[in-house]
Image (cartoon, rainbow, N blue to C red; front, side, top):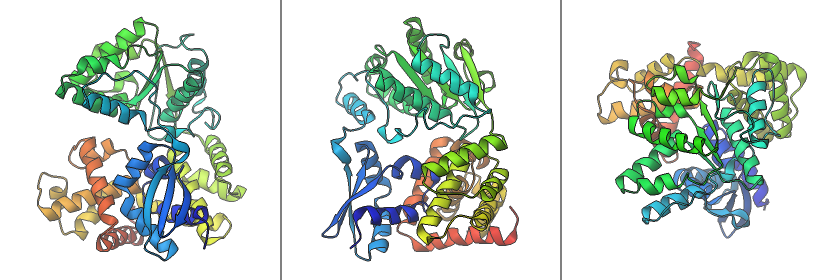
Length: 444
C-alpha cells in the first residue's frame, strides 16, 4: 500500500485539473496526506478554517478522487495538523453571534503563509510597490501612510498585503487583514444584530490595518461611511493603513469623494503588467518552488505567449508540474505547446457564452437576461463557471458580461456548478464537450 503522502500527491495532481487555480492555491496547495487506515483517509490542513471549507465545499469531489486513486471506497476526514487554532474569522463571527465584543486581534489566514516578501518575485513592473510595502512592514509610519497599491487582477497586490501582515505577526503587532467583501459581510451582520459598536471595537487597538479590494465598496454607501470613519479614527491615532484596489482611487466609480481623498493622501503605487523579462524571472522562481525544471526554450515560449497576469503564469507552472508528476515525462517545448493550445480555448468570453447557449438550446439574450426557468438558470450558471475557470476574468467582470449581475451572484453560480460536477457525470461531459467544441472550431 502506498503511503498517505504519495496517495495525496496523486490526488492533488488530479484535483488541479478539476478545480479553479484560485481554489487550488487557496485551499489545497498547503494540504497533505496524514494517514490512510481502515478506508479512512485523513487530510492535514494548515488551519481549521481551511478544513471547514474543504469539508463543506469539496468533500464529495475529494472523496471521489481518492476513491479513484486508491481503488477503494475511501472516506475522508480533514484535520488541522499540529493542533492549529481555528481561523480568527470564525472566532470573530462566533463572538458577534453570541452577543459579545470581538477582540481586536490578528486576522491572518495561516493558509496564505506562503505570501511573504522572500518569495515575492520583484521586477520592473512591481519594484516601487514592493519597496513601499517592505518599508511600512519594517518601519511603520515612517513615510507612507496610508499606502495604496493598485493594479490588474493577479499582479501580486494581495501577496504584498499578506506579506506585510506576516511580517507584522513576527513583530507581535496588532494587525488586522481583511477584504472589502469580508468587511461588508461582518458589518451587515453587526447591523442586523444591532452590534455596530462591537464591530467598531475590533479596530480600536490596531497598529496596522490591511484592507483588500476596496473597489468592492463602490455603491455601498453605508458600508463606505463605516469604513471612512474607522479609517479616519485609526489614521488620527497613527495606525499604519495599507489599502489595495484594482484601479487608482480617482478611477473607482461610485466611491465617495471624501474616502477617495483619504486614499490619495498618502503614497499611491501602481503594479504594471509584467514585461517579458519579469515573466521569465517569475516563471523561473515558481518552477524552482515547484521543484521542476523548465528548459530555456520552453520557458521563453511560455513567457512570450502567456502575457496576462502573474496568476496565469503561476497556473501554467502548476499545470506543467501536475502533468509531469502524473505522466512521469520531463517538461519540454512540446508539453508547453500543449498547454498553450489548451489555453487558447479561454480567450473570448462571447464564444464561451455562445457555446453554452447552443449546448443548452437557450438564446444568448435569455441566458444573460432575467429569465429563471430551470434550463436557463443552469445554462447561466455553467457560463459563470466556465468564464471563471477558463478565462482570467474576475467575478465582477463576469457579472458585467452576464447582464450586470453582482459578484455574489456569480460566485453562487460558480459554486453550484462546482458542487454539481462532483455528483453529476452528465454535466461534466457537457462541459468537456463545450470546451472541446471551442478548441475544434478555433473560434477563440
